[in-house]
Image (cartoon, rainbow, N blue to C red):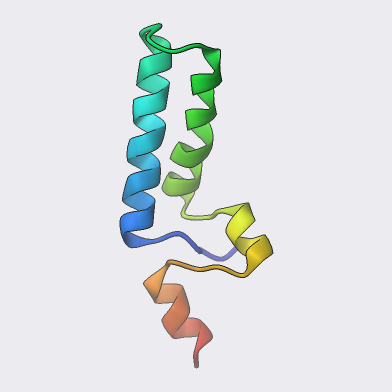
Length: 68
């Protein structure tokens, strides 16, 4: 799959994922917080399946390649 998550989007996904996972691991929030694994992984892998479905792309390097 092509990278479609980049820059600030990637940083925010990783941060949100780590915060949710951390809060869940410390029992501050319930088990639903494990959903933080999803944004964490999409940020780390730089691929978001939902972005692919909607034709979105926040990755600058992919935009330059696609426009050629």
